[in-house]
Length: 250
Length: 303
Length: 84
Image (cartoon, rainbow over all chains, first blue to last red; front, top):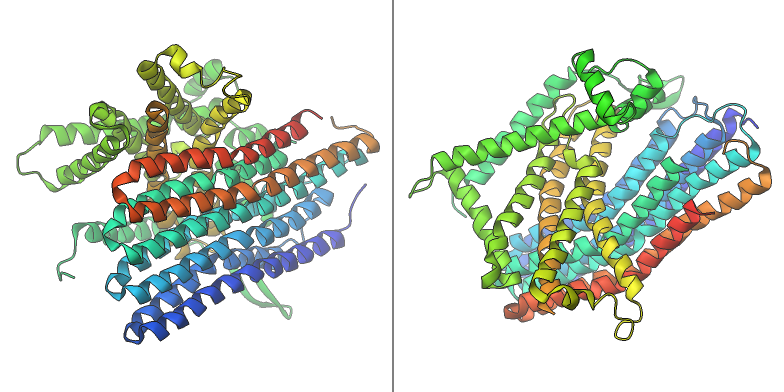
């Protein structure tokens, strides 16, 4: 059962649309939360205007990382030379799955990073004196919550670049099995990063909030944030393991 | 804010310069990226084809598979004799990856030993800057140990510091852009071994403190704990999560760096990515692994 | 395993897709829940820093318990991949 090149191209374009379309949803929401909290902060503390503005912009830029990952994947799908490659059903399924993985995978991390940045803006408005420390903590927290988006990006890149061509002369059942398992890998890591991303974002947001209220306990709060975020990440890691198994071991 | 630059900032700036230079030199300014209009259509692609990158990823991350497909004699051994030797020990398919791993582990060990001897030779009352750095690391971790386990269990500090320094240096060493250099933690065997070690130490300590039966009754007492089988699965999942966390983060960073640097032809972005994944993610993962290994002990012996 | 019939292929493919969906959706709840625990622990440590090690311990145990549904998903996913 061979597949013409047009179908691979269809899968690539469909994957590109899914990736950036789904990935843009919560990226927008997250950036909006930060901007809203920033505006409220300016209302409460007009003197700290500059610092709040800076925190807001940097926070929004960091919260959009997952959206940028989705954009990169869709650019690769459109312009990455997949219109000339062959590879049969395996390639088509892998391209669609890469789009799915990164598109859905951007959901949680950007929401979490948005919450974290919003709380940081609130904190800066409350304690402009400790603005730099809060901003540093905000960046670290957002980077932690983007870790699960990075897992989704890794699986998407592996689906793009490490799936072999479909060998000639396989039975229909085998082809179906392998193609569906690739889509399953994309779904596993995509859905699996939503919860951890949002959860780590909540941790980082609470840490930012408390850093504005109790600036003296900075090191203890950061330590708890690291530990808690790392443990909340473990389900994303289980999803990564399952996705690797579905790509390489089936 | 003081006007004077702090030593850490100086080290950081120095590091960025070195890293940039090394990446430029190692890439040889290759221009493989094609951006522009071709035939009325916007083109953004490597001149090297999709298959080149695929082959590169296979060579970088599944080196055994790569040599099995190509069927050539592996270059990294230097001579056929060493290859035969390793092939006899580990078997043909896993010999290459194992050799690479052992070489990197040896480099990390020698580096750590060298630093330790160097610091030990020059121990001063008024410490030099490297000594201050290492004393800072030691005191901070010692404080964590006393906070978590109590004052009488401070003898866990050397174990914790060793674990931290080993994982940290392992994560850092991949930042050196020499072909063939890789983080030992990128290979699943190393994090899995460390994870099994850490969880074993947790249980050994618990048995030492509470006695064999005192520890085991949490797991095999169906009256008190009807879901005891799930607790055993939970213990196994501790190993899985602690080791796969390290492995996944480091491997993910390595894959992203390889793909992105191949796509943008080694210009600017890889330096930032290498610094992010090497310094930031590497340090955080080393810290998290150590702290989890420590807190698991604390949870077990406190009940 | 290269030459299987269409029916066998469909069954196995369903199991694999099921494994992916199982782990993906199963990671949703525990992720948010553990994040909530850790967030509240941050708050608690900021409010009473002298109880830091107690709070950390409670946080880790609570997270281990709320992670158990994620572990069930992992077990089911592995069973679906390797034993069907």
